[in-house]
Length: 204
Image (cartoon, rainbow, N blue to C red; front, top):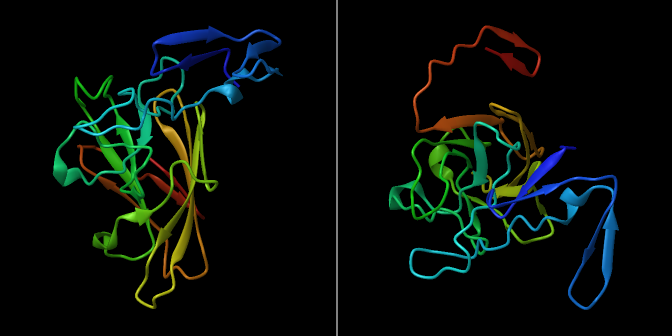
């Protein structure tokens, strides 16, 4: 775990000490040696262009990291800075973003999209940001995604991400109904070159 964690879209910082006690609504005290577990990453993310309750994004990132990671719940063709809502039910990919605020916009981003079928046009995937199958932490995002296939049996994709200083570690686990497993990068530019393939690991 990290020596410092950032709250409310990098507005407030909390130094981690051996033990932290917080007073919650109703007078109950919560004590933990891992205060990052108490962060409500989805706070203030119920928003759209026309209605907002916070204008924050559920950033998953390292403190002072180079990139932020957020699930995108709005199709990219809408060309909006309000591309995530905690009430959304569609997963268009995990977005590598440099957007400080919806009011400022994103000055560099791309999507990483897991999918079972070769044709990525079958997207979006289905998921529930506030459901029991999704986990948002400052240091990790995990979600159970559903993708229909041609046989009519949904493919389950367990998608997990944890950020690094410059990038992220991603794992996508596909159910037996999947014809194959793919990770596609959409948007942005890159000079990525694959130098080694070993089993299920790519290096480049």
